[in-house]
Amino acid sequence: MDSSLFQVYGLPLAGGAAVVVLLLVWLVYRRRTAVQREINSALRAVSRASLRDIVIPDVVNEQIHLDYLLLTPKGLLVLDLRDMPGVVFAGDNLEEWTLLDGHERFGFTNPLGPLRAKIESVKSLVTQVPVHGRVAFTARASFPKGKPDLVTSLPELVEEFGWEKDSAAEKSLDAFHLGWERVKRAALN
Image 1: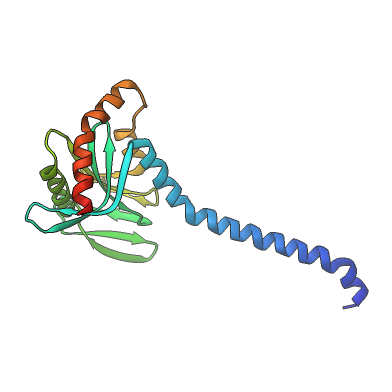
Image 2: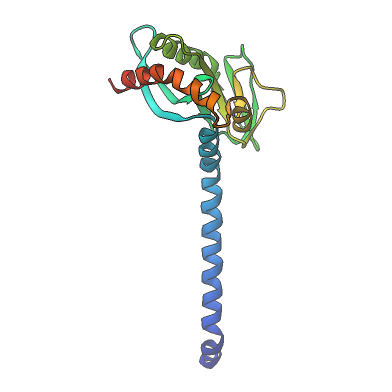
């Protein structure tokens, strides 16, 4: 290549290539953070406060791990979160559920039994506070044969537990505050 041609065209080509590389990096970043933005948005929509990755005593004097515990106007919500891209085949009474992702097939343990144990563990720590539980999947999962009762998507979770910040909701949250604090103390020990 003639050096005078490089001097004329080289700098704009290098600048254009840099812009393309930066655009690709930005697109990869946005795609990777989209799921976290979806999760954060749903958590803000349904709860006043949240605890993440906590360990509390269970009903048989052992310990049990909670992905999330949320303070909502409907009570405390034990939330197991799953980001599994693909098609999920699930059932209340199936020991193992199946995830199809393209040509790959994966089996995983039915999360409803452990979720029920987590709900009971939280209930054993609080009285007079409703305790709910859900296994929530991000938008990357679909359930063509239906979902079991305690399984939901993040948008469905927001529809069920989302709330307007009004005086009735604030009153409910205040009523559940002592139970919330009790679980927080138990999680710290």
